[in-house]
Image (cartoon, rainbow, N blue to C red; front, top):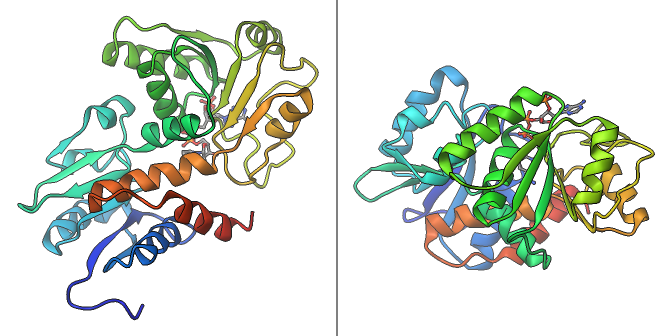
Length: 288
Ligand code: NAP
């Protein structure tokens, strides 16, 4: 850390735990590539210390932080304001500190996801999109898709959770096309004929359950042309391997992860992020 001196700007990650995060590697690689006197540090914060930690961000003159589990929702009452994105997704993953000490929170997951779709040449406006899952990642993905004009169908193991997600987004983005279906194999076989883009936001297939898939065995992928899996460990999930064998274009979640980080970096520094540098740093950490 030989570049740290009296003028170093500090950003970081608050969460509990934070040891396994790839963010320090990604962000510091970007600072070094741009020869910027900034550093990104892990900041482990137990839940009962969150309020004190947020005051500390302000008091210590940090430029901002990323926020991860379990603080993404709990931090909201301690911030001065949050953006419409964070409100819609009901979670903050990025905090920016203004010069006057004001703290505002936003969520860069939706932007990171959309940016990655664009980078892969996937258009969504007016397109029917089938989303598996209704958890935290789904809230960001569905919000991003609906805002971009997609017609979204959500299928989740716990149907009530999908209904709740859709109800919430209907209030935030009224008049959009959003529906819920159950995720029985027979229903998903029907949906596979109605959709050309499938997004997995469930954790099914994530390491160490690498042989599990959220898509039922034996029904094929129907008319689906592109499958996007937000999971990034492993880089090639069972879902993506099966979809590729069917002939689909397949995209893993690493790009979304890197681009949401790049968006935070842009908000703190005001500069355009070196996305390829951040991507390579993330690949190096994952060994892919
Ligand atoms: P979460 O809030 O806990 O939601 C988990 C989702 O997976 C829920 O829809 C849950 O369904 C479903 N699920 C879990 N186990 C299941 C099973 N055995 N069968 C069927 N459905 C099951 O988690 P999250 O924060 O949304 O994260 C989900 C995944 O996205 C994780 O792998 C995470 O690493 C990844 N992620 C990636 C990025 C990125 O930048 N690429 C960003 C965020 C998250 P129920 O509602 O029925 O429980």
